[in-house]
Image (cartoon, rainbow, N blue to C red; front, side, top):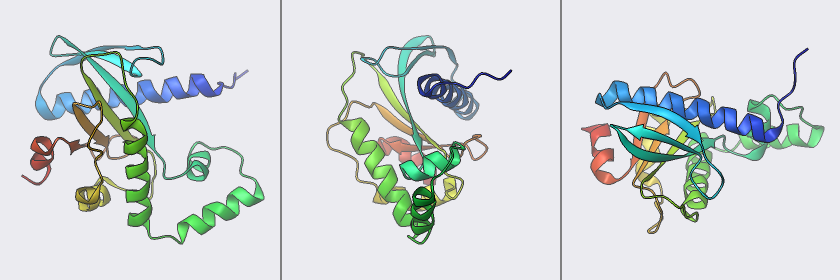
Length: 179
């Protein structure tokens, strides 16, 4: 008999999946070893790992677009009103929704503070309507908050990581994307 995960267990599973995916893609791209992940309590970023034998914390976020889209993508049962809301969202230009959702997510995460020395924000794009290419076309229009706790901000281009990772911050890293 399959046991259904509660919301917190599912969140942790998704965060670990995203962290492992990011670490593998980062290692492939830069040849720097990232190993040993473990989950943290809320006062700390979601996941800790070793980056070239130095401790590094990762705050993990998933980019869905909206709560309604998240429910749909995660396979939740949708009420009639939720379904109508989803259809209305689909009439909004995709790139506008992408920028709005990404700006909102980064802005919300920027308000957090962590008990750690080094933290990177890793955003995993979970919306199948958006691709790494869409994000690459529009990421220069992102509004990066002046104050935030992140040394680097990365985006995994799709749920499976097939499109790779994209640096969103700092500008020295984003320059590599168009290099």
